[in-house]
Length: 263
Image (cartoon, rainbow, N blue to C red):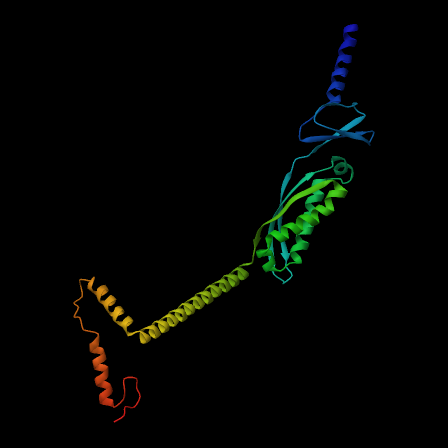
């Protein structure tokens, strides 16, 4: 008779021990409720509660990562874009996260989606493409302000991963970029021509002021031509050109500089 009574009592004790002992991991916190009333938060380790009276809800304190579903957003300049974003957040106060909101994960994701559409809807397309960091900072601040105090959730990063444009807009932007590259190429080419002409004009002025420079340039050209064995060079004294110019001037009755010559 005693043996029959001992077995059920042992089972009851074992069942009570199983329900009374809770293991809280290092990255968790246990929120304990007694008859539905908050009595405290338990840290990592082996924790004992009163079975069927106390209830422990474990909260993960690590940073959680959620990829937000793609959203179609109309920007301020009436361009429809498709945006992918990612959200990083963690629970800062486990008590508020359990008592203040029914499902803090779902609530944080939904407020992030709403904020994403709102912020991008107030921005122009060029701002979304060129100033991504500023938009990410604004997203994080707005979401964090709405989740930290009332829900005990801190948003560490809210980032726009990718922006997909409609095909007509992509073709238009590609054409614009190509036109811009052609414009820059033409400007650079024109600037090079201007600088080359300006340099040649300065060189002509120097040669006109110093005739010896023309002779030096003539000799340099001869040396360069002599290095090419495929050419036959017949050297002509540079004074020959001056003699020809004088003969032409005498035939036309003008001076070397083009002024009328006195008879």
